[in-house]
Amino acid sequence: MGNTVSCCVSPGGSPKVGRTRRQPELLEVYQAEAELSEPDTGTYLQHISDREIPDDLPPESNPSDHPRATTIFLSKSQTDVREKRKSNHINHVSPGQLSKKYSSCSTIFIDDSTVSQPNLKSTIKCVTLAIFYNIKKRDSNRSLDIFDEKLHPLSKEEVPEDYHRNDPEHRHIYRFVRTLFSAAQLTAECAIVTLVYLERLLTYAEIDICPSNWKRIVLGAILLASKVWDDQAVWNVDYCQILKDITVEDMNEMERHFLELLQFNINVPASVYAKYYFDLRSLADDNNMSFPLETLSRERAQKLEAISRLCEDKYKDLCKAAMRRSFSADNLVGIRRSNAVLS
Image 1 (tube, rainbow, N blue to C red):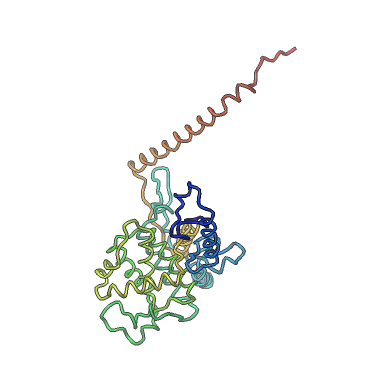
Image 2 (spheres, one colour):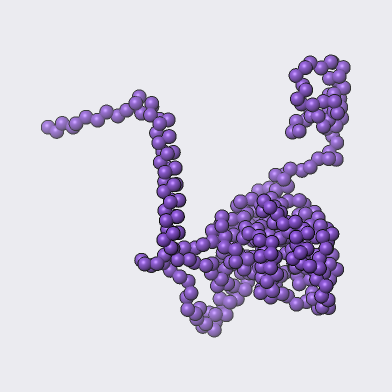
């Protein structure tokens, strides 16, 4: 399929049936059909690597694709962080009692959240806080009808007239996302990918997440992230069991629009994923949201020791294999040592 001449060009041709010599007339006709079919790019599907942003473009053009660009939520949250620090400095407000735990000789605390296995509850709190800052610090109220909650309500409750004016609080966003993740049994990694898709949508579609559309945008990002990340993804009909008043047709239409607005770019490189994870950690530190620290128990210490011993054994095996490969050369250029004679 990757060759220029394949079975898709001519109905009678196949790459596997090319060992017998063709007749000259048939070969000329085959080549002519291949040349005529080359300019036709109607069914050409652009590879995902061709849709990635080149290195010569500024990183700020799309932070969800570029690993060195600052995430949107972190740049918007810095304004509040600077204002809080300035206010505390002017009013001589004490930072308060330090709640951070430190290890001692008798007690060791370890961070249970890592980039490969994030803590679910803390990650959801940070992701919803990032969504809160994207709503609070939005530039305008640009939106699309497919995400408007007035046109496509998620429940049968009447949407108030001023629904587009009041910004949701962080706890409301957290409760909404937490309900979906608990019911669908989604992972913490899925929450990070959800935030990547959300900010990619805001950049690609040039819209803003605002009070009138934040629920449907978040729902669409979760729906897509769960299908991309999890091996056993949750079906659209399953979300209809969580949100009782939404229809499968509405979910399918929203998913289709979401993918089209993303230009079907659902690739999340490891570097971008790691950037979002550590930016979420920075957001948590700026807002006094510490990740949980657990006391190192005897069982956990034994497990870490076993993992460390396994890695050490693998390293020794690699060293022995490298020494065996260079053993013959060592014999040829061996260094002979002799006793020194002092006179």
